[in-house]
Image (cartoon, rainbow, N blue to C red):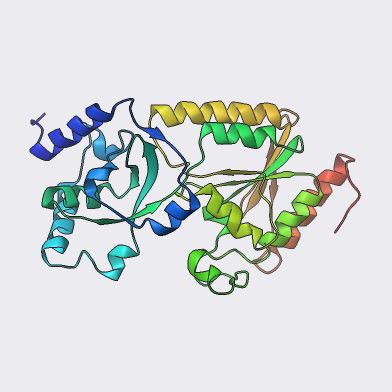
Length: 299
């Protein structure tokens, strides 16, 4: 293997200098709303990101492209500001990079600052412990925010929130999702939202309050890699398995029913188009509840 470049050595030194020192903490609402820029020296490379792995490392072609943008004065464009480096606050100082290492790398090499950032509070193991402690029921429903709850261009969506909330909450909620979540709560399910994306869980909780929806659990940043996160995910999964005897995983095509009290697991296909998808899901869940003798139909 070829020797490290000067920049790769810099990354290795930064990782070693901060090993065991940086602790993730929650950023306040004011900090998340108003701190939009930071010096590259206050951003720390993430040891669990492939960018920092000696066997993988940075893509120098990508870094070179960003360096060219800096030289040509295009770095300060609106396009760059709309795609900030996603970070998490850490102690004793600064922010851990979650997404945007190559932009940070270009800034380091060009000694360019400040950089646009977006501060998020991801869900950690202690957060899940608190959510489980507040659980109201022994059964739950899980939904993926990226794949199911938020919709893409051309898909039917709930009406947008009025200004200024529409500027803060930019994702579009799939039509019928708030009604479905209300319905599931009435059937005594705890409702949990998951996302691989780097949303602050306070952001998700506050957004859905505008639709009178309450999530019992929100887990964000599921795309994080590394042994620390993998071990934490295993512990969180065990914690949730012990809390809930039944879980319904709802996606666009099917409902998967699992849990301690469901052996073997069960799959229920959702045979419906976009216009009647929510009603089809409600019908399946209502049938499961009546089959178990837990509730009268409320459809």
